[in-house]
Amino acid sequence: MSEHRASIRWTQKSGDFRKGTYSREHEWIFDGGVIVPASPSPAVVPKPYSNDAYVDPEEAYVAAIASCHMLTFLHVARLQGVEVISYEDDAVGAMTKNEQGAPWMSSVVLSPRIAYVPGTAPSPDIEERLHHAAHEGCYIANSVKTHISVVPAKAR
Image 1 (tube, one colour):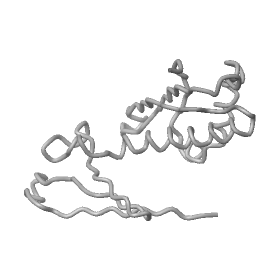
Image 2 (cartoon, one colour; image 1 turned 180 degrees about the vertical axis):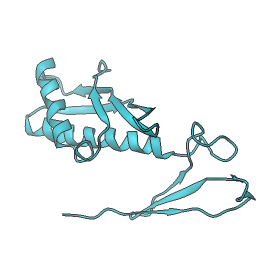
Image 3 (cartoon, one colour; image 1 turned 135 degrees about the vertical axis):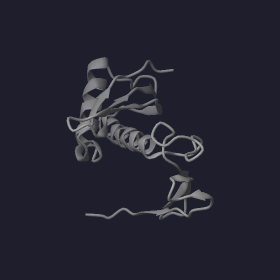
């Protein structure tokens, strides 16, 4: 079908690698030329060896799930004649430990706030079906074992 690539670049700039006192700041480089400053979460690697102003893999994982759901929802809504004006989501992922004690993103809760063109807003039941169809069609949701739930927030 298709391939998708990302490049990761890290260079030791300071600190002592052998002692673990080095910065983990790095870059994600995407094919369109976008460079995203990245770092481990301070919840995983303490400051000053991490940078909370940069994107961490856990945040990116949650954002990828939320973005895929939104894009699929917009497509499904359009096919059903539902016109969306805006879509915002404050998604939250929860890290827990699995049966072996290894950390993993066990759940992601999506909280979309959607505004519709007047006269096209779906009923709550239809909106729920649209979210279900979006979840079923989201390739990222189909690729992970994280429990993903949608709890719509009230539209603006």
